[in-house]
Amino acid sequence: MNILMFGPNGSGKGTQGAILKEKHNLPHIESGAIFRENISKGTELGAKAKEYIDRGDLVPDDITIPMILDRLKQDDCKNGWLLDGFPRNKNQAIKLDEALKNEGLDLNVVVEVVLDRQIAKNRIMGRRLCANDNNHPNNIFIDAIKPDGDKCRVCGGELSERSDDQDEGAIDKRHSIYYDTETGTLASSYYFKDLAEKEGRIKYITLDGAPSVQEVTAELTSKL
Image (cartoon, rainbow, N blue to C red; front, side):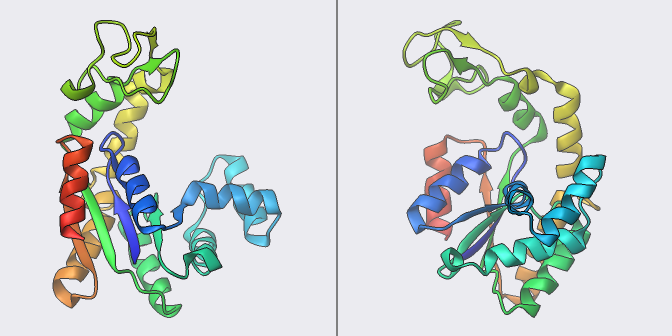
């Protein structure tokens, strides 16, 4: 099963992706990791990508997509893969779709985690880190994992905030790209949604990201 995932920061997309990865034994393919791997190995595409990254520019699609395709053709992807973090705009979606078809790689499922923009922002800004264990879930805006006052709900440890979680400007910038339905990430997601409706070769699943992790997982499992 080859899966493409969409969802805004704060939607729980990463959590659901991790669950899918474990449940179906799928490699999790993330564009940022592909860049780092190619650069560290000194590949030709990696060297080209590094030139753009070092200048602070976006890596062009004609470099990014071949990297992704090369990764999807590796041995651990023979029984399926989970692609996350790409495409980020409609033009990339069109190019990725064409490239997959040219390589004979089928995209089977597209998952979109739907969440109101303000709720997504609150979830990011509400995250709190436990001094004893960063994996202890604490979020002041989620009732199920709300801290015990200013202490960790799991162990009573001291809590702190990540500085980037409190950068409203950065959060708004990322969300503006994601929620743009004309040219942004949602536009790329809707491109595949249109394909699913018109051609039927892709299964498009929408998930309500507002409930608990367990409830979202149950909805995902029932729709796959």
